[in-house]
Structures are given as structure tokens and as C-alpha cells.
Length: 378
Image 1 (tube, rainbow, N blue to C red):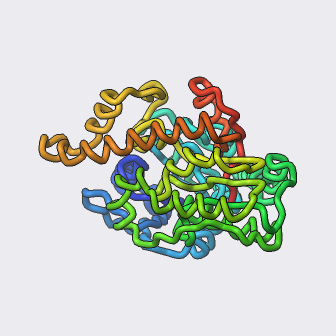
Image 2 (cartoon, helix red, strand yellow):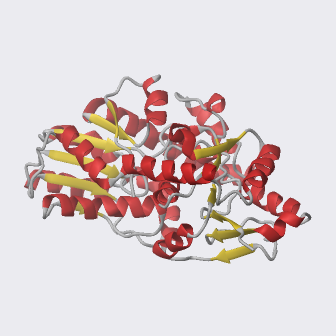
């Protein structure tokens, strides 16, 4: 019997709404439909609750992304629930690239995918929507939807990205005058793989972009341990200033700085002539202490004072008073970093790059910056 195959390839966490997938599995296991489906789950982060075992569930831990894509090609639908406001989900492009439609709660960035996304209104409807597509993977309706997915993916290819980027810098890039500032030098998974691939693509486009300011920080544990104090990363700031003094760059692109480099370089770059200073932000991390815990646009305060920042931070951490005291200092440092970064963007950055129109619309309502949409791509 031909089964309908679903795939879930994201973090198994509350904000990604993985518990909704588990509830769906519990419900459908009690019906004859459980014999007509397969659900393939990739990732290595667990919820605190028990992970169920059903005959239709298949788990694959810590797999290479290429292996995931091979499995993806043989699936019919991607399950992509998320509670918080996704700004650009690279995983959706992976799905569209192999003609696999996405079942998703229609909010955030995926709104612009239009017909390629099968949305629902609440967790009850999610069960009904998924159930309605079982055994339809060979239908004409599904075939047209799959074709539309591949066509949409073509709008986000690396060639499209190259054309957009060259328009942005007016072809002022050559082998010796482009500086890429980023804190990722290895490929892990979705957004990290994208950040790493940008470096590879720049080398491919211009032959030899020799001046790349890159920091390799492979230990995730120490990354999170040091994140609160990276607001004052004087060492990395000094290295960047030294590099700027040495070479007359036409273009400096702060592509990924939130994990370790952070805002100090933005405060000093005005001293050094560059034709273009670019900054990319990938999500709303400079506007909220925990953007992954924000589940609706209405609950998002774009210009927070310190007391609002602390309140937002304490609402999503363990409520015990001792833990709040411990978390106060990281929240304070992150708030200072956010203000430094906002000031640096206002004074010293020519163009702010965001990955989606969704982000541009919201940020433009509150900040009068020069904002350009440069979509992420695989």
C-alpha cells in the first residue's frame, strides 16, 4: 500500500511546536489512518516529555543535511508548525526545492509563499488539514501544488541572490576590496549552513575574495557561556580596526555578528573610509531579549525601555527569585548590546539587510533606516 509520507526536520522544542506533532501522532494512532502514513523526524534536541514510539514514526538523529535532503525527496509533505514569528525559514526552501509542500501556521514570513503553503488556524484544524491530505499524494491537485513549489524556489536561487547583491554594491567588489565580517566558519545546519555558504559563494563569484574576517567558534557550549559578555568584545573590535587600517575596503559587510562579535565594531567603523557599509540581521534579536518566545505581532514591543526589557526577559525564564538574580546581569548586558547596535546602525551603517519583506515592513514602521531585502537562499 502506497503511504503518505511526512517529514519534520527542525528542533524538537516548544517554540517549534513539536508537541503539536506529538499530539497529532497520539490522535491518529487510534485510527485506521495510522496504517496509511509515515512521519520521518530529524534532529537531536528533545522535549522534556516522553518521545512516543509508533510504527509510523521514524527518527534520525544528527544526520548530515545532504542525507536529510535525500529523504526529503521521497516525502510528500513537510510539517512545519511554529509558535513564534519566523522571519525566514530556510527549511521551507529546502522543502520547496524538491517539490514538497509545507503544512504551516500562516503567520510570519511564510505568508509570502502563497499557494505553496497549506495553512491552518489552530491546533484542532492542524489535525484535520493533515488528515485531509492523506492518500492525496498522487492526485492532480497535489501534482500542481508540487510544481508550484519548485517554481517558487526558483525565485530564491543563488543566481538571483548574486544579481540582487551586485545591484546593492554596484559591482564595486573585486578580489582585494571586500571585507566579510562574520562569526561562523563551519557548516552545521540550516541558518549556520547558510552563513557558511555565503562565504563559499562569494569566493565562487569573485574568484578570490582574499580578505575575509572570520572567527571560528565551534564549541556551542562555550558560545552560550560567553554570549552575555561578548557585548564588550574589545579583542575582536581591535582586530577589525587593525584590518580596516591595513586595507582600503570599498565594501564591508557585517554578515553575522550576533553570536560572538556583536556591536562594538559598528561604533568605530565610521573612522575608516569604505564605499559601502552593510549589516545583515537575520531575526528580531536586537529588539527583544528572547525573540523565539514571541508568538504574535501584537505582543512585540519594538522600542523597549530597560524595565520592559527585563519584564520580557523574566517572563520566559525560570521564575524562581535566585535564578532571576543570576539572569539579571546577562539581560542587562544584552540590553546594552542592543542599544549599542541600534546606535551603530543609525550612525554608521549605510544599508541594513533583512531576509524578508515581513521583517522590512515591521522594522520600517519604527526605524527610518535604509533597509534592503536580500532573501536567504540555499
